[in-house]
Structure formats: structure tokens, C-alpha cells
Length: 459
Image (cartoon, rainbow, N blue to C red; front, top):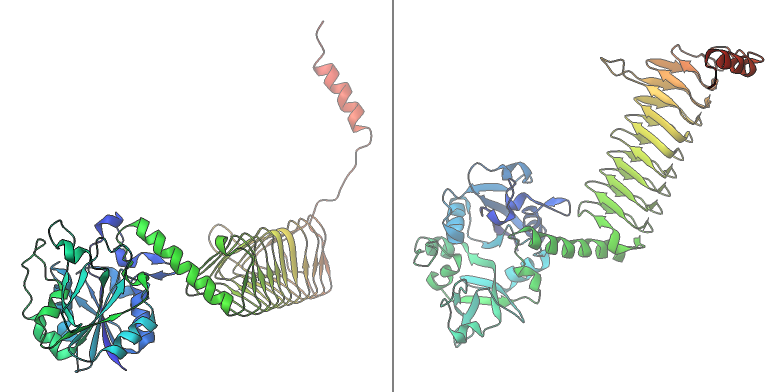
């Protein structure tokens, strides 16, 4: 069933002690507020409204089609929904979620909407220790009479404190009944705020409750300790999702994987690996140990070990590492290799080509089946501008060669070890750019004689 979702995200989050608004803190690769937004969309919401305070950057992270409502004054959860009321269209159900309670699942929202049949339905859960949560007081026929807050001593009676059914802060309302009840809210409480649960007492019709067997629904985030706890739960859920889909994590406790990462079946993730952003890994690849991939694609059957890669593309069957650094724009074709202590930036490494060790390849295009010797440098910057180096196919570049860009090396060409190549090398030619060696016979003995004469020893 289609419905409107209202996400409350205007809280100040002062306990986070951060210049970043609370709901924009990262949670496994996604701003906190987007977790309930995306859960609502996956549950069938056709209209999503996020309520925020004025002059905050939340709008910048919202997906297309998600509206923003502004709560001009911090006057409570009821005031937040009132701020969204003018943007609630139609007569369908309205689901209210909290932007700082990110672990609500699409299934829990679907269940709430499907059980909604009247003016209001609240989602509740049963806690062994309900301390600090609002208690759900039911009347004789099982409908909800009211929600009792327990923030201050004296807010609730001993009998009410003994109730273990608590308010999750998630509600489903009939749109018209909600709009009418919002006009009747009062701020007669210790905080002087408009509480959304008061709607249950004011709404025209009985309020029902649907119990969800998921205590995560009340895990709100108010400080960084709570954020770390929720992140741990979210991370475990992400890993279990991948493992159920055929991915092997040899040490799940040491892996971190963003919710935005895609991993195909039969991939192996070794210990201490971090996968972030839009990273995607194709089937039968092995990644790790000690590897970080950010917005990087890894092809099928590739191997990536002890590597940091950011916005790179690693082709099928390619081998990377150990101790490799792939910077943005590093594109490795099928069965290519970037080896130990190699840095690649804004370069294309052709199919079957190898840069085995101790090299810097920047702003370079390498053809197919070329071999770049140890200690190779492509000098791409002249102090003012960047220039490209072009190395053809089947090139054999010996060790300790520097290419001074812009320069081009033809197919099947060779370079002599220790050369500084500043001119183009034709196809099939050998490029030699170094001083001719000269040996001086007897140099060591003559030097000793000179040193003894110039610096005689003590008397």
C-alpha cells in the first residue's frame, strides 16, 4: 500500500558535540537520516518528507523526489509534524519516523501499514528493561489510551513504570484525522513542547498498537557512544547480508563494509579490509588482507592484496599489491599487474601489462603486454602543467628509467636501464639516454696516496 512518510530530523543533537548536524553523521557509508528515508521508500512510500531546522545542509543529501519541510521553532515532535502538514497530500496513511532511529527496517514499516485500520496505529515493542522509554497504556479493549513519558521523576506512576510495552516513536495515521488532531496539540508539559504522542488522545477515533519483535526500533542516537553501538549492529547486518548471498569473510570482526557496496557471490574478503562508497567486486575476486577500496570496481577473478585504492578500476584477472596505491583515475585492464610499492594515478594500464614494483605511473597510457621495470618514474609535472606519457604495446622498459612527459614510446620498443627518456622512441627502437661509463684504473691506490700526503697522521 502506498503511503506518505514523514521523517523527523530537526533535532539539534548537541550531545554529539559536533559542527555536523546529528542526522548527517555517517553510518556505514550513508548519512544517518537516509536510513529511514530509504527504508520508507523500500516499504512502498510514494511521498517522503524530511523535517529539518532552518539553514542546515540536509537538503544536499536527500534523494530526488524527497521533500524538505522546515520546523522554524524547536517545539517538539508534534511541532515537527505540524511543519510537514501543509505538504501532506491525499487521504492515504501517513507514517512518522525518526531521523535518528536509523535501524527501522522496510519490513517493520510494511507490517505497520498493513496492520493500520483506523485513525492511528503506533508501533511498539516489548523491552526487558524499559527504563527511560515512554510506556504504552492500553484501555480495557486493548486500544491505546495514552503514552506516558518517563523523562522526569513523577512523570509516571509505579503501575505505569511497571509496563514493558514502550513507544518506538513510529506511528501510522489517517491523513485527515492527523491534520485535525495536530491543530489541538498543547504544550502543557515540563519541556513546554508539542508531543506527537498526544495526537493519540486527541485523534478522532481509537488508536491501536502493533507490537514489533525488534528492540532495534528504539535505538535512537543521541551521542557518539550510541552511534558506535548502532554502527556495530548495522555493520553486522550488512556483513550477514553479503555472507548469505555467497561472500566469504575470513574474519568478519575485522571487516568494514559500507551499505552502498556491492559484492558478487564467491568473492573472498580477507582480514582487515575496508570497502567504502560505490565499491563493487565481481565474482571469484579476492580482496585483502589489509586493503581499503573507496569507490573502486574490481573485476572477476582479480586479486587485490595490501592495497589502498580510491576511485580506481581493476579489471578481470588483474593482480594488485602488496603495498600498492591506486589513486583516482587508475584503470587496470584485464590480467594487468600493479605490484609492490607501485603508485598509479590517472593512468591506463593495458591488458596483460605489468608494473611489478617500485614505480610511479602518473598521467600515463600503457598499451598491451608491456613490462615496466623496477624504479620507473613518469615525470608528469613541469612545474606549471601536467603532461601525459604514452607507452605502446609489448614495450620492455628496463629498471630505473624516467620518462619526461610529454613523451611517446612506440610499440615493441625498449629502453636501457638508468635512462632519462625525454624524446619519443619509434616502434621497435631502443632508447638509451645516459652518460657513457668510464673506468679509471688504479684510482683507489692513487687516492690513498693523496690522502696520506694531504692529511698526515699524528706524530
